[in-house]
Image (cartoon, rainbow, N blue to C red):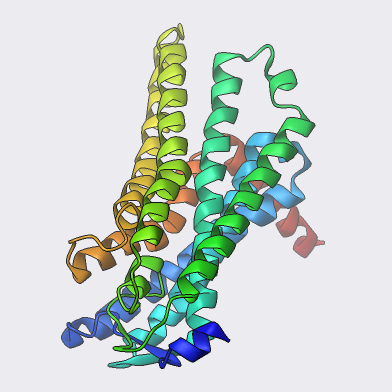
Length: 314
């Protein structure tokens, strides 16, 4: 239709790290290892929470959904990036490129809102422990969960539809690791000023607002921690909060730098590194930060392991 009449581009070329041919093999090995560990770590969390009835509470169900998002987010980007690393140039069809863009936005947006919901859950549990069952009842939990996924879906649908409506008449080389919006937008042969205003506003609402709310939640949580009588309890809680905030800052910080200004002045290599931090590192770190340092998760893992050993024994 309109796009076909105006666009001469039928496929794009993903350049990835073709500027560093001598590093391609090493990068392939590192990224493959990270991808496999990411899939395994998040899959373990999903299975443990699904099988262990005692973990069917909002905190762990949020974690389970976060693992689904992280695993999916990684699966959307990493296989294609690994293919790019095995070749000098990799072609991707117009439809496949925008399908990848849609799922990056869908899962990325969902993660933004999920992290906000998780921070609110922790704030309610730590700062209002007595009224927590009423604050975070099943109805509230389901509303937060459905809203997070719905807003992610809407973000992907609106933004991908808008960008795909621009004419692309050449060149067709995407100097990036994936079909992310800013990288593809640079190839549009049309005025994208209105979209850039939308992108700036949308990023403020989708990334910066949840990030600020998370920071405020953790400030209140820290005040609650300072009132704890046990020094050991305070130290453990501070350690947990610090690791959570590190992950959140890494994800929101680099994502906002990428999407606040789609046509920013950062070099292509800087943009690739920023993209790797939230598409590669965050899905890898989240299972370690949110789950495997958690004593209840470790107990549930050991319980399931012993159960499996007992089954094999008998």
